Length: 258
Image (cartoon, rainbow, N blue to C red; front, side, top):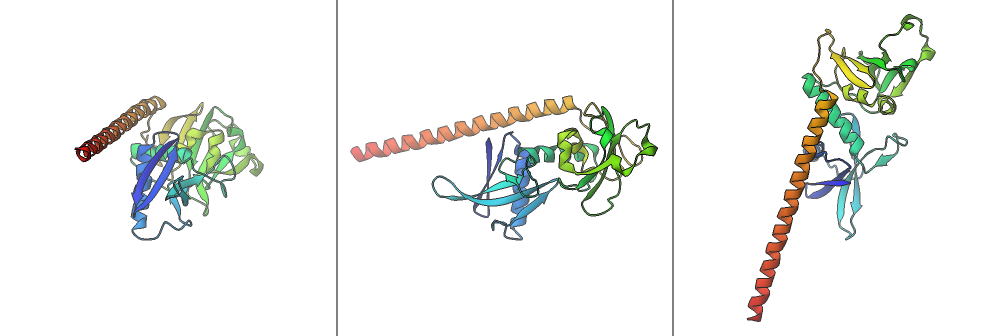
């Protein structure tokens, strides 16, 4: 597990991730620092809705008894309404996916949280060709997204029993790539073939830009290489500092001996 750490109003804040998600961690620390200028976030009650995910600040003590604060997020593998985890990997990865989709498409995001619902045609869950279409929200807690079959010969004959409303985080179970588009605006249509995003259009049926899986893989490898290089350099600086302090101490002891 990788530890990211920041000082916010003289408090040590840490977050943990299995992946080197430096940019996502920095963005989270930055928004916390901004909010802390206006309100007290260090009270074990603070909750941050940041994009799709929710984050919580919890007080801890290390092995020396020194206080620090750890960021927690929703545990999507258990009961999300009450269970939390120190591992922010899933929330940060999805955050990155959605930020990238919005930036590449050059649109303004429209909010959707992990608990906002998606209307799903049950037949589409295991289908190879599906699409998602975002409509206006019907009420609070509704994302406006619909998940259906790309080619549906029974489209006009479905009954209410053929549909199911699910919280958006449940898309992870059968179409994780769909999480990428959730912050895109009303009117967006996303097409998926074999669980991969293959087309994206806006409300005027104009093509929207998006990154391919191969492009994302190359970018991920580049980012990991950069992160590992920064870690190596930080370790080298720490070792050099330690060596310098050790040398100073030896010289000081020699002077005392003289």
